[in-house]
Length: 315
Image (cartoon, rainbow, N blue to C red; front, side, top):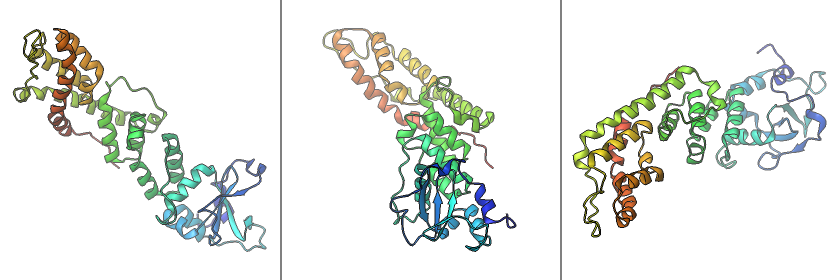
């Protein structure tokens, strides 16, 4: 690296061959400051004025680049300039470069960028990886367990977190995956970047949580089924549904999807209502009573899951 000239280093990040087919335009604020000392030109020909110092602090890649001897303006190897500033072509598009540079900026310089979807997340992570911006990458990974990512694409979140060896985020995603039976999540491309043993650990964790649900049998006396005291059919409890039958059904359901959300799903409650039978009055009251009862089970169920350890491979 030390013996290469700047133009050779820049070749590593150069964009496609037709990058100059469009007239370059300047990025808008805050990447248009006259005090900047370098320009990053994106694949879609947007020029970002930025600071060598900030790039060097965030990226050993750029730090090494700027440490190399710089050619003089009269040197045939001198690179293109604009506003008297050297231009570095990069292969990222402007939407990605804006977000990446925002993560490299002081907090007062620009708002934290919004990561709209996991495709954007992966593109910014790939760029951070390429330029060896480890702290930026670590921060971005910490954002992927936001509810709007987990609820929409939990398997992708798990695979991304696992790929970057983010223990906390991997565990959060694995916990969220308990809402599904182990065979339900479909293939996502990010699985190609983790090992088979990584995925096997997720499957083992899911199975262990399901098996641990049998521990609920020890606490059933503290959680009797709610009484209905129906004045129409004059039956107490959830009629036609014995305590043991309900408890066995709970454990069976939690073995497949070991989380409290399983018992709060409308399909589950409807199934129990159908099995409970009895009069119309009971059928109208049972769903609310069951939902209240299930919420009381949240603490023991969460406690059982918290005692199951997700094995993670560390480097």
